[in-house]
Length: 391
Ligand code: FDA
Image (cartoon, rainbow, N blue to C red; front, side, top):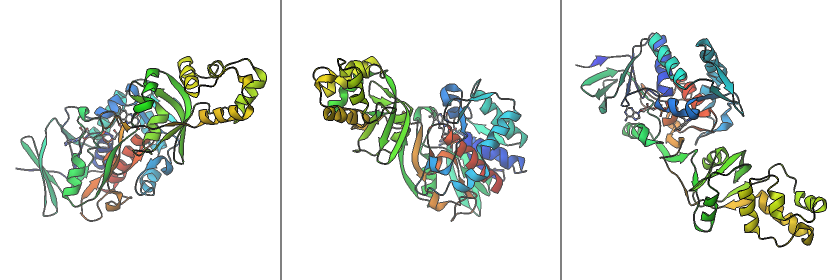
């Protein structure tokens, strides 16, 4: 015997819980199914346990997708202010850390508890810890078999996220399901992910633990934030951000002195002619980084012994240091997934499939990827809300 609902949501992450709460509070009978033993696991580990739950600078140009216009409708109808109002209504204290990123003062658990309370208000049922063994579509109904149970509904929402961090239960399940229903999937790739260095650049791994405020560039895209050297290569916010734009084989340019003018080294020569490049760099950069960069540049003698032209060339090299990553740390370390269920097959207003009535996809499962800094949760809330209103 199959239990009957109005909506079955697959995945109890941020997007699935928001969708279930909204649809439930609109009077729909909702079942959420998740194979994990607890809901919102990625919310719990996000933002170092404090969940960077939105970004007040949310705008469509901070999202990557094969169709950059797709996000506009959902983001325009459910804004950071809407989620902030919910957070405030629950008395959850928060603060802006940097660059519009809002974090809980206390714990990410408060966000999960809030979403569960919202689901409870909508009488949404949440079934956890059972693997989904079958999904069938016949007579305008979706039937889902999970554990020893079966449920059916005229609407099915794919909210199973992307494959980043598989050890937390992340899977490509949503993609397989979408393909089964004839939807296209844009090739999934790890994003917001550390990059690895090899060959001649392996030496930089010795700087593991050193960080600096830089501008990281790939093609026309640039981010000014911290970069961190690791035992495998490069990480830190600037690198995670640029990794979403990086393709295998492309170089990444790092400006190690983003506040300096083009002639700063020539001016330094006038002020401190007896200084070495290393000592001058060490006034701005961490010692070990100053040492490695000056060793590589191998400028002999003091600044006074160099022609202005040579110093300008060194400054130029330091402002556009070329790294050639040989890969990334992959889905095991990626915060999100680029690509996913093609937006071409979905309505941007409702998140429903254009071809198959009653089939919806939301959150990270869809080919929409935000920048680092709360944007991905804002997409999860906004797309979940859009579907929840339409169901
Ligand atoms: P999400 O992955 O959260 O949920 C999918 C759910 O589906 C999971 O509960 C999973 O168990 C379930 N599922 C998967 N396969 C299934 C199957 N076969 N059967 C049944 N259930 C299945 N973003 C941000 O904006 N601010 C931040 O601070 C962070 N920090 C952060 C840290 C780390 C370490 C990571 C990995 C990621 C972040 N993110 C983030 C990204 C953010 O966590 C992510 O974009 C959202 O959680 C996506 O929400 P979804 O609900 O779409 O998927």
